[in-house]
Image 1 (cartoon, rainbow, N blue to C red):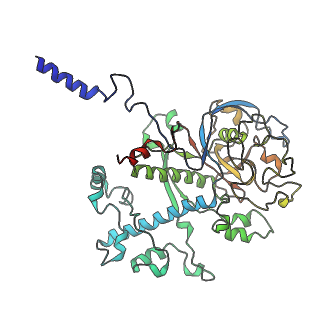
Image 2: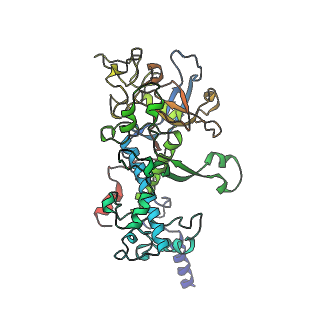
Image 3: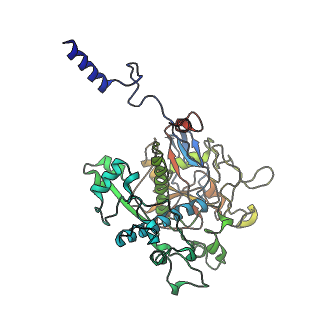
Amino acid sequence: MKKVLLTTMLLICAVGCKKNDKGELVGDKGKKWYPEKPFGMTLVPGGAFTMGKANEDISGVSDAPLKTVTVRSFYMDETEITNSEYRQFVNSVRDSIVRYKLAVLVDELGYTDAKANPVARYGFGDVDTTDLSVYEKYRLKNYSGMGETGYEGRRLNKKIELDWKTSDYPDEHYAEIMDSLYLPEEEIFNGKRTINWDKISYAYTWMDIEAAAKAKGSRKDYIKKEVVKIYPDTTVWIRDFNFSYNEPMHNDYFWHDAYSDYPVVGVTWKQAKAFAAWRTNNKNEYQRRRRLPLVTDFRLPTEAEWEYAARGGLDGAAYPWGGPYTKNDRNCFYANFKPLRGDYAADDALYTVEAKSYKPNDYNLYNMAGNVSEWTNSTYDEFSYELVSSMNPNLTDSSNPRKVIRGGSWKDVAYFLQVNTRDYEYADSARSYIGFRTVQDYNGQSTNAFGPQTRMRKKGK
């Protein structure tokens, strides 16, 4: 009897006891949370504020009546997303497409020996199963061949660098894949070989949580797939201004190193959302490799979050720096905009300026007024303030293509720089004066700069 009782107690303890919990209620993983502060972001502490126009509504739009709302804490990019940061996105997607094309070709040709066939080194990364986990081997065995192409879920080989110089191409198969990425000969001028950016698209999926929560049905009915051409529209510098010489901006602004730290423009609302999805996946890919917790999604800010962050804790102020003036006591402008009846150069900037220009607001956010207007996640409706909740307000309407932009830009007068001024643009439109920045939900932060994972790795654990 004693033996049976002892065995039973051991089984109960094996199932229900937690090591070192002393029988206390400590939770399934204990009391700890060590997230990483996102690089280049600042914490905007949640709170309540008066959203809307406290000052005179000069335009008479009457679309921003005063409303007290509360938003939760979140991280926000200190600056607008720059050309350099967006190029990282473009180049990453471009490289993945090339690697995928090469891997499929190697698979179809059946090449395995890189010495005999140099292109074979670009085959799928899961061909050698010795380094795969048990689950990866299971997925490869049971799911390979399924899906639209039959290659869904296959691991790309990112260990081998891509060769972009034609003189470095390893063989004709490699040259064939690379050549398919560029514009045909008849579209090339001055001997400049150019990538056909229409072929560079980013595909991602997301779930319409709001719709799923309000209706019953299968989960898969609310999972959406987006395929977005991601290259910014550089022709906006020509199309936005009739009878104006802006070819240097069209030719150089996105790619030239001189503009690397300037805000990216010519990006649609859908492209901005695609960037946020890629940023999440890119970071989580790193986290998975190191067996670290996944991060919460990067996304566009809601209209309320944007206004709250722009105010920098100054409730009722007209501008991020307070107000009501646009110059300081040394007669210098606080932001990049169109002052003095159209004298663009009066603020020492003809077009945009570097994303980290002027003095940041009290949340350490740069250029929340001027430089470029910024996309938000919210749909524009003149009556939205009367419709939305007073807690984390946000209006989303997929049938309405008008999306809220905030902050004013280098080509706008001071009225549009006010933190409470609302404006909109169509989601599929790209402009030379609209950019964006992203946010990430705040779930707590680490108690030291490195977190416990780094300390554990240093100990060899």
